[in-house]
Length: 471
Image (cartoon, rainbow, N blue to C red; front, side, top):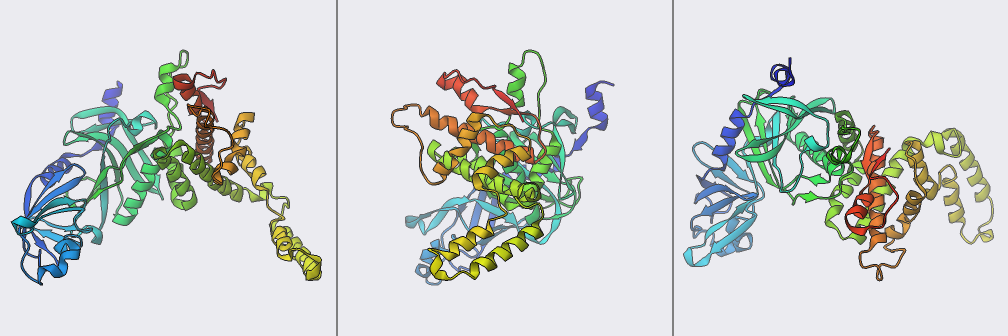
């Protein structure tokens, strides 16, 4: 049996028929009646049609009730939530209109954008969910970074692109496909879930994919709710305009490795189990989630700010690793023994007259830290605990993080037009933080050494480091 036949018989079957029909209908132009607590817009007619990252609306003249000027500060009611009702649909613009253009000379008719829209019943039901996120320009799908398998969509066969992970022991499918002729990322669950949980999970998936790939997908999302994992009957939907997508620094790039490799024609993909661990750990520990978000979102900042944000992330991840390994590295082997000793020492200090101290409180605070590893040592220990070997240059960059945390740049950038040294530190910190995060999630493989790539493409410093670094 060849590979295509095997996928056809054994591969995952994805049903997009009803999804495609629903979105085609949802995005087409429709007429509604507005229901609002504001008498100025309650019962007026409104048309709605999908536009770029929003729904475009056009509404008739406001009603001369109230009097209208009473509601002027709320754009006569458009700024607050309102409902859109027709014979077939009942939608809620739950954040009001995102942009509002009132035409004074035409009886205050209105056009604008609705950026958050959902069906009336969306929040009240658990269900099977499917999130659809359009691919931003110049971004790459998970297929480039994460090991995946073939799947079927109707009569179409894809040889790769689908992978299944479990989040809190619930199965989630992730893949890419065109819908309504738009390339999109799909994230779906196969057990009944509350909608809030599903939205939290897809956020974690998006940001974890962001740190792996440098690709942050988040222009807009449609979440459809289904009666069953057959994905046939759609019972509710939620549309959201999100923040702008971003394209930053990838932590690894199996495709680039494959293109440059002369002997080993392999693509060292991230195993889906590692990605699964990464998502679950980020949901379990919000400190890790914040560090992942910092690393994913910092691409929008100037290079000086990146140095500081990466240093914050380094401190955060280090703290997590050190805390989990306290018994291995703390000066006292036994925590109880340490606590007992600290109490006894504090009693001795307490018995000394206050006049003998410049700051008795400072001494007592130091005793509290008796069983803690110093910050500088703990940074290097966090890598040692995960068996990540550091070069002398790595250690030099790590030791500079305190300067960046306090807003200092420890070298002259005024006479360095390309700011090579600052770029060097930033790219190295990115590599080190991502190495910690991925290794903590079970990864062992090749990281992309972005400062070496930048040197090859821009700086020509003949940096003596490998382009891909094994951790």
